[in-house]
Amino acid sequence: APANVGVIGLAAMGASLARNLARHGNSVAVYNRHYSRTEKLMKEHGDEGKFYPAQTVKEFVDLLERPRTAIIMVKAGAPTDAVIDELVEYMEPGDIIVDGGNAYFKDTIRREKELRDKGLHFVGMGVSGGEEGALLGPSMMPGGSDASWERLKPILESIAAKASDGEPCVMHVGENGAGHFVKMVHNGIEYADMQLIAESYDLMRRGLGMTPDEIGDVFEQWNKTDLDSYLIEITAQVLHHKDPQTGKPLVDVIVDHAGMKGTGTWTVQTALELGVPVTGIAEAVFARGLSSQSELREEAWKQNFAGPDGRIELGSESREDFIERIRQALYASKIVAYAQGFNEISVAAKTYGWNIDMAHLARIWRAGCIIRAKFLDRISEAFESGEANVSLLFAPFFKQGIENSEADWRKVVAAAAESGVPAPVFSSSLAYFDGLRSKRLPAAVIQGQRDLFGAHTYQRVDMPGTYHILWAEPGQEEVKMSD
Ligand code: NDP
Image (cartoon, rainbow, N blue to C red; front, top):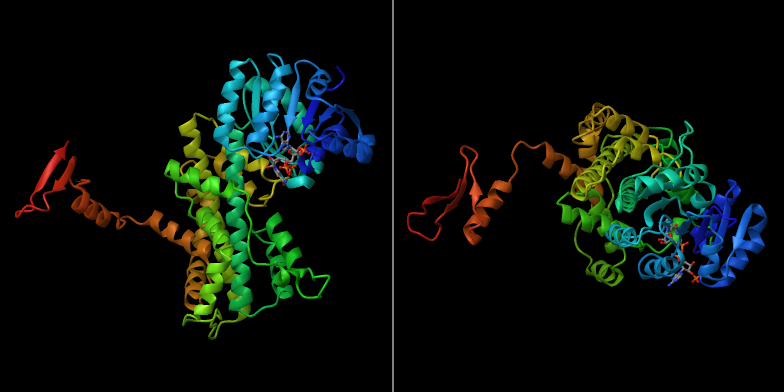
């Protein structure tokens, strides 16, 4: 058999990945349910390397060297199961099936188990970077057996994005669903990061009355600071772009409904299951939801509620000084969003028995993926040294970052509230930080309420045991329920 690897599913992602593989010296078998996509790939890019087009799944499998390696890049969900079922008919023990789609990690855990029972290796691999990343170098997060990683490593390292120090942006994340899990949280962090940038824009646009061009310039400046990142860079590009039809700023002609495909929602649902507050990511998902509730928003606008119009009163402060405060608020909130995301990964790792090298994970997000950013180097160092073991927020570099930004962060959240510019991720990140650093929380009141209406009991600060007040009895005595 001529091909050392195969790709099934040749839409945007699969075609790009197949080309990337071929350009790096692999012999690539390609198959797509509708042959027209395969033909198109061969016609347009067939000369970029060694491709072996197949018309049927059997033909595809026969083209693969044994033990075989097949990468699936199809729509997540039922289509992935359908393709796996077809492959399994022809594959043999020892072969590897990689799912590079955006699968839900619990599906990956299930599929890995089913295929392991048949002697096959199943690898759930998160792929980030979109179509361009897949072609020029994605960040890849495979999860699966050690044996499958040994074989995949050289192939994946050859096509991965390379960080500035040359390290390939791919690692063996852990067993079964670990790869898809971290890809899911990567996307959740991406949601928070994007929303923070959007809130910063809104504060400058409505709050300070700046134009998209001026704000684009600010983001360009910010990209030379600690905030240096792909998302800040592309935001400047979007804000500077003029609509070809009207000449207006493009951002002013785009309908303000943010779409989503589900990974942000999964990150939050999973965090709720695990009991990990990822408030920044959750608020970012809800902000997209609110943006798309067009009828409700229309109705609310018509209500013409009394209240401030979004204009921030600067008083004696200069615009430049306030813009710097927004930058500081963005930086602090971003640290919180990452800390929450990494916290979700570490709790999941314990729950699902994955051994995830967080320092390495931060390093493979330095290039190729959407959240690539300068400060991932610092995150990696913080995990490497053990300083971030409990929380990223406690690593001296980030602790100091938050402390330096803190006063500005509070001013920005206060100004947003006073002027009526919604800043859900700025405010919720600050509330999380304040909650975390509080010696005592009002949760004691909630325990009192719960004990009164539901006999849910409480514990005391001064002695062990579980207690309940006989609220309905005249004496309202305390009884010890257990030791
Ligand atoms: P799509 O998600 O649009 O899926 C289209 C592909 O799936 C086509 O090859 C299609 O075949 C195939 N397909 C759909 N249903 C079936 C089925 N029942 N049996 C066999 N094949 C089927 O393609 P993308 O390239 O956008 O994404 C591929 C995967 O990569 C998805 O899981 C996506 O979530 C993930 N991903 C996408 C990113 C992106 O930026 N787009 C980034 C990272 C991951 P046919 O041509 O015959 O219809």
